[in-house]
Image (cartoon, rainbow, N blue to C red; front, side):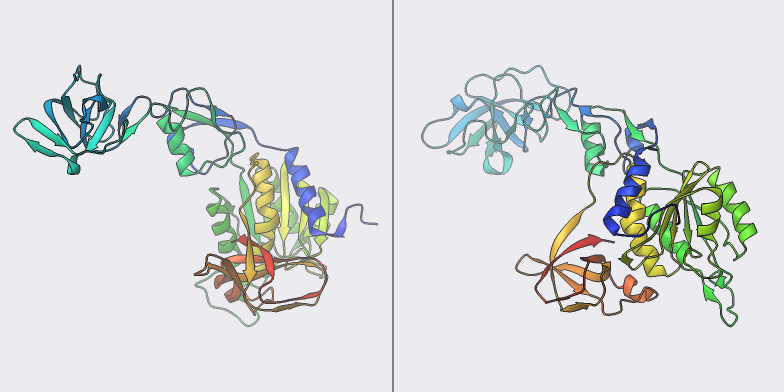
Length: 405
């Protein structure tokens, strides 16, 4: 007996990751709104003011009372002043009068309608306004975007630039967000050589470090890359223990299967805790999730496509839960562009290219190079096609789930 789940289905693995991370969610901190993009909101935001905060002009033109217009034909109004965007001028517009106004400028007293500048003719202090202008035309009313006192952003949302802009428009100077997890990245293996150095027979370049660092930076994190670990269990034990005492998350690549040089599972079993090892998924079956000291460990296989698939499907879930993210990641339904024969029972994440069709459908084309070491196929793909458990033949035109990558 191992004492921990092994060879479990993907849904169970994901539930374990979410459950463990949910009990170790990070604290909140307050940051300036200028630094909030990409963070996870840790509070609800209620609008302190309305948007717009005052009636204002939608266009450059002339503002007046609609009652001043002739019911038939055009109308000539006397131009008695101007109101630009900025501080409201002390103007009162009477019957038969108008003011020049710019986009975003507040409406002066006595006005309720705007005529677009290009539609009017100005001549010697008079403005000829065309017929057919509706009451309230080209006026943005107070609160038509956001009413004061309503919830506009929710705890657990990912702060996109548009959401941060909304907070800034409401005058909010700082926001409570969840702390970002600290992440240590390890690659393992005596065969690894850094890019730029000569290769000896039997050696390969270390591509997984750059893959993981890029994936983590795309999540807005600032990971720390440690030197490559040799296949030496004593050296691994010391270095991983140092990282476990200092980081929230430790991600390793390689050394996690069942070979003579795969020391990571034994080290975690002996010195920490394993929550599961091996998941019925392709690629990435040997993935391990555990903990040591203060750090949660997600230990990925060494093949680069397995690294990509396990990080996007389980690693991001771990980071999201630690940061209290409640919004699900985008996931789409797409039409399969070519037939595919699935010959195994595991849940599969197949590389593919997702694009739109002229008739408005999403089409995903599977990449024929599906082995877990074929990095070129991952480089040529922008999506993972989710193929459900069980062997089956997929036909072109079948609808499948797709994850962006």
